[in-house]
Image 1 (cartoon, rainbow, N blue to C red):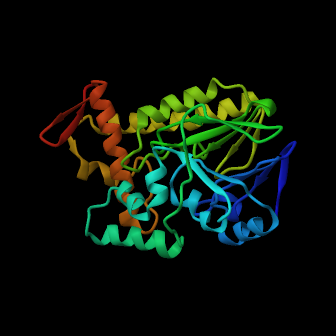
Image 2 (cartoon, rainbow, N blue to C red):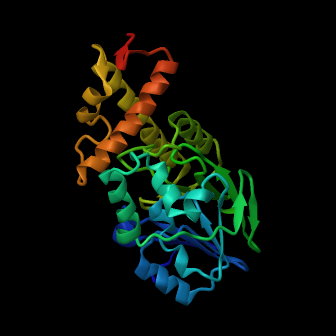
Image 3 (cartoon, rainbow, N blue to C red):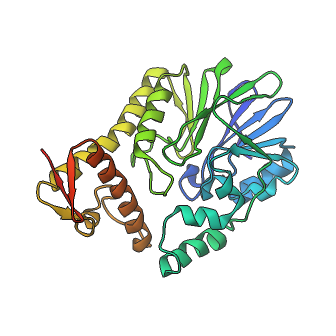
Length: 299
């Protein structure tokens, strides 16, 4: 098992394939109360960890499949998450609904099969629901919950103030940028969450899909680049809407994905949800007008 010590009693566990989706990175705290943050490292690694360590608490950053897939390995642990993401963790069906696929369609069936067959995703217990500011006293370490909605309604980061360390989860500092393709995602909340994170005092940042980042200035620079992806997407969208366009005309431009991976239908669907969220935001800001299903920029 690859434990990378990043502070006293705090270990980074890289997920399979360096934490790239469909895996994710985890954090292990080996204190009087032993904590694992997220179980998406992959079944082989999860099985090894469960055998080597007696995990007392499993903290889930949010209820997406690549963060909860291996919960079932930790039967003796208490599963804990934000109250808003608890329903999606308890029920694969609820998670499927959050992807917003039309009920009864082949796309909905394919995502459900993907979650259950490829991930082996199962309904999970949730033993404790927490909120913003909840503090886990682990012995010598105190772990603070920072509610950071946007990616999901209940998305959380976790900070260890004594070590100036933060687990960013899916504020993941990826070159792709923020992802908000679920029905409970929110672009404005995502922006606010990133700005709030920048206001915290830390020197070490761990994200779910990228390596560890050190140094406050470097972390904030990466957060700025990550955040600016949202505004870059909006600029492209506004420029494209110099003439009135429908959703059906906008989505194939792939302003977010640039090129749709396979299965193309699923990623086109996620693009549509994210574009719709941008359009709602731009209409609210009076930068875009909507008329009979057509959208046009006002500048």
